[in-house]
Length: 388
Image 1 (tube, one colour):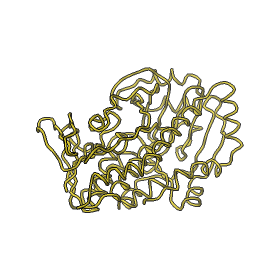
Image 2 (tube, one colour):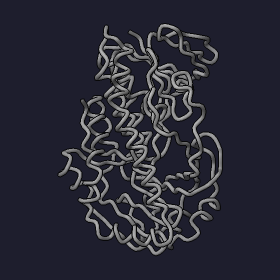
Image 3 (cartoon, helix red, strand yellow):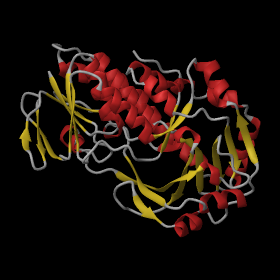
């Protein structure tokens, strides 16, 4: 059976790789002229590492990742350290797998290299799937720009939060704005200002905004993400942003953080888009994965991990010659509760990050008093995941 996968991001390439390793023929349709290796940094917890191991990609990914020295939380207005813990030791001890950070481009490159070395997998770039409709009998018709219509034996929608395939499967309309704008930048590690660690994952908490940074590209660069409430409604995730926008949002930043935010040569931005968790990801021989199924707010850094998990679980339920529609339904049943919890917990974490007034004071006190092991322990349901 040949499966068409719409979208060549992490979810799409991982799904193609997982299915090809199970004996399927998989073709990835990506609208860009090539599979993109750009983007921001990302965090790979033990669950993501296990998924990459299951995909046979971890050996290629691991050398491109960085093991952070510590996870540090700081008050973004005073600069005070609220907590700092040895995440490497804690994660290895509790979960038997590492916690790493990486650049999205490095992860994509390793996934694509692994995929290209796997028989039964092909990439089709430069052709946007701009229309999809469900057909009687469980199939789906796709229209590929400049190439015409096609009716694959099965379809996987991995085309993100504004998924064309989702509209044909669920018909839920466009996502709603999250009310946040996300600024991102890369800074050479050698240019990190005094008082800022280029070796830690550091979260800076201020009233209504927060920033996080960590090393990527084998420690040569620092990935910076700054989050603020905003009604900006631009499309895409690589719009140019000005230093003034970032500085205005973080006007209350302490000197080390202010210097860090002023240091990058360029800033990019994207507007957050969200959907409430809803079932119905599968329809006949079509199914959704990754952000097309369950767009995840970034406040627990699990978007990539959930996409990787999806790919592994989907392939485990599918078998060449089997009932692919039943496999898709079983995959959804396996994944829905976990991903719905992730979406809700990530949104809750965002509210905690952006507390103000007395609630913020109490939050900071709770962070100071809680040992790092206990903080990680509360997320055991997340990080202890293993492939089925």
